[in-house]
Length: 256
Image 1 (cartoon, one colour):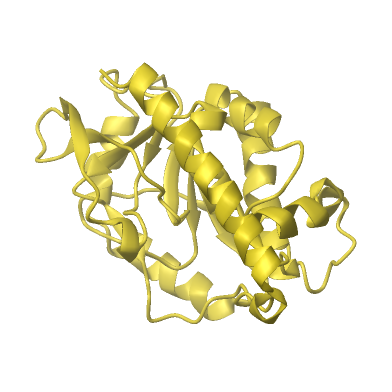
Image 2 (spheres, rainbow, N blue to C red; image 1 turned 120 degrees about the vertical axis):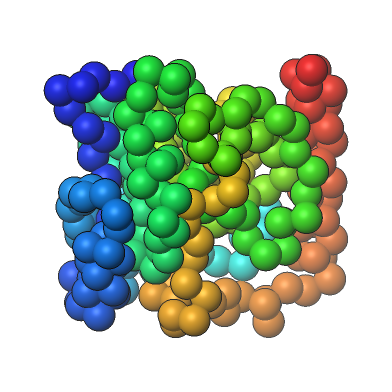
């Protein structure tokens, strides 16, 4: 997927005002046993840019029907930041690694980075961080062992709910861009919907990075719960049931 002439670009999504986070992630890269260069990507601050042009893709009415709450400007800004990097991946026409600035890098990040730059890597998308705590007990299928490391690639079948770090190729970036012409869910949930976007949930395990849960989120929590009347909750459960059925059918058809 890559050549010896150019190593995979690493982008770290960071709000310009989040200087402390910038210092923390930089110190982690400096402590790695292998020098890996990276660049900051200025995150879209939804609160300060409420009329950002990509927010026009958001369907607030459909979002409320599906989820029973409204997207915050912070959530839209997060979505836009990842979306713009998918576009950057297409523009560069080569794979990239996307990290959020709350990532805790493990020493094995270097081994994984070397693998991603090797000829053994023929994958189009890989999660580098674990799923959210509520999803970590899910079962997975073995795919392959990574040479000269203790890592392996496994396929998962439930939501990830975490975009702390992932590897993405132009082919997958195009799939996501095509799929997200209309925004309904948060970016992590949108990426989770593999039965619709046709992006397999493949991950490198053990995980080479994880989110720093001690840091306060830059994204406001859901403020729409008071609006969840009985009708709203029932409609939300109906859509959730429909998703489970579609996912089940997809898994039956595609799982080996």
